[in-house]
Length: 256
Image (cartoon, rainbow, N blue to C red):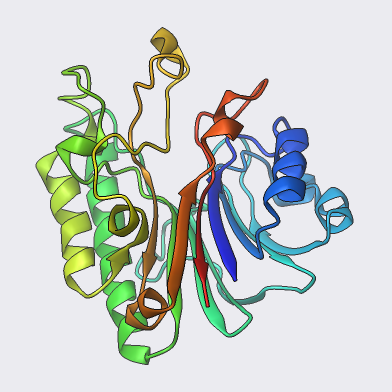
């Protein structure tokens, strides 16, 4: 089973790129983030034409998450992250596919910091950590996939000081991600590529793609069962270099 996460950064605009990648990579499950489209504008006909069922939670202009499943329909178990009764941002969806519980998540960016956006980011991560703990306790195979908007370590950012004040790298952001890993989750990309310089995001500005000035923001966290079944991990960097690409590249794992 091949499970991927891809911050598509506007599904209507990047639909041709998405369909090309689906045809090339043939993932079994895909977690999408930043749909930037309301529910009614999700391109379900094109997705189904590519051979995928889908569940999605859209939002106009910003946010939006989806789960695609090849030759089947995801069975949605949650439409949002617990603990935020007043939170209307479309940042989390969870579904069962092929005996695995899959979450597609788009964590808050948190900039500028300090301020209310950073406070919301940290509170959202607290809610995620609490829910993740419950998923582990349930004892079912789980993958938490998405754009966490955290570069967990200094080596997950290209050599620069330009991000020093960014919410993505603050000690509080990194501590929250570390607390998640300490529960028993495996960071699949770091497990497979312990070396420096593995990135999943390259900003459009200042020729950062051309200079490989990237960050690692997109993560697939596996519970203990799935970690034992891990057989492959990759970042499809070439997708970032295509015309009118998202600023993120797809990241994937293969499990037995």
